[in-house]
Length: 375
Image (cartoon, rainbow, N blue to C red):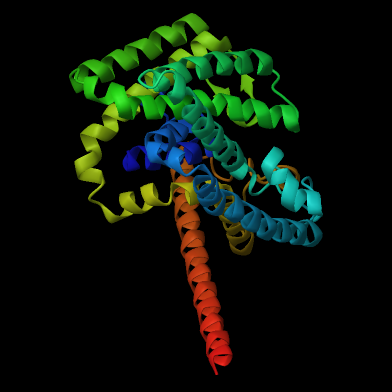
């Protein structure tokens, strides 16, 4: 499952630079058909039922792991974004205010543009907490059917969200935050149901499952007239609840089996273990890496005098969706993905070093105060 989390994170990177390229056999597995759901599914799989015995401790632990880094990193990106706006004329995003630093990450998560991909952290946190709370309550009434009942109920609620969002989606605000959260719940609960019940019955041959998933996606594409994709960040669902759920389930089935086949091989590679273990960082920071690569390539071409058509105004207005060389060489999208992943892992390494240094300082200060008080 750690490998699947890494695959989901990389799929997010792919989707943000090239939604339909690099997307699987003949475009039957576009990233926007499963990327976020797969990540939430794995998070549900790793949920531990014994967390319900100590709910306050669980909430504090998840807040420390998710919300505190979210707010800290958001503030850093806010400073960087304001500097970029002042120095180079980038447009959009919020200014540095208490709301943009503390409230916006929990509601919309798009305030500083270059870290817009961090929007998923808050709904994932609240989905985990709500799922834990509901799970603890339902267990008292129907212990054996808890996972099934929660999964069914959350799929119904998620279907309502798909209908509410529709083609247009939702504007930033409380409604969008709630709908993101509700859409996360079925995939989180499905991950837990898979762990507790479905996994032991998932015994069909790999070839049967993978071929069936691809043929199913082909049928869905035929019915819809196009690949069925959606955008959870803005709750834009273009094909209704049924096709949205079917395409996601088929994609999850394919990716899950692919990871099962390749798991023993890829999880032994240090890079794959690193991506899987640091998938949150990959999802949070890759778009800043894309902007950095775009700036480097554009600056290099200007210095070398290489003629190239590039929309500088578009870059300043849309820094996370303006890319270089893709018109000339679509395969350059792969370079963006690799740079985005590498940049994210580097940011994570720096963050861990700073965190370790801060802890060492606090420990030293505590020891010093203890010595003074002891004397």
